Length: 185
Image (cartoon, rainbow, N blue to C red; front, side):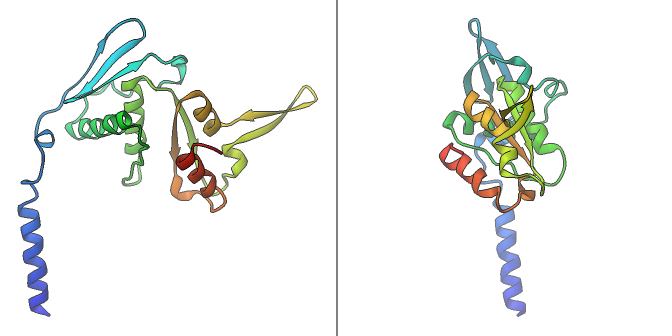
């Protein structure tokens, strides 16, 4: 028993001791971000060695504001760089972390930096399929179907931020899975 414990401790010690060896140059370097205007409606966003050309949003009222006002930490810049890489590859992102506002703030900082439009859904136990798709409203004696955030994000090319996905009920998960995997509802 003692031999197995000492083996585990020595293995842990070796892993922790050598963890700095495997880091690439970017993780040890000082990152900066910049935005350079190209022409009317376009700019280049750079974080470290990763750059992306972005267009001005057609509805700037949907772009988050005032999240980049404070100086960004190196930790935040490394996360934003990773998000920029995922965006360049056209991949979805799933931010995990402790409870609190950090994940949402990071997403909003990225959207402000790249000038992307936001649609937001706060999921809870009470969220239903129709809350994600369409809602029926009666206006002037007639029923109208109003698209919800997930549908608007898909049809208008906006970024969908899902807050509290761990609270979603079972009947909502297949809809979310279908939206993320197949881009359809």
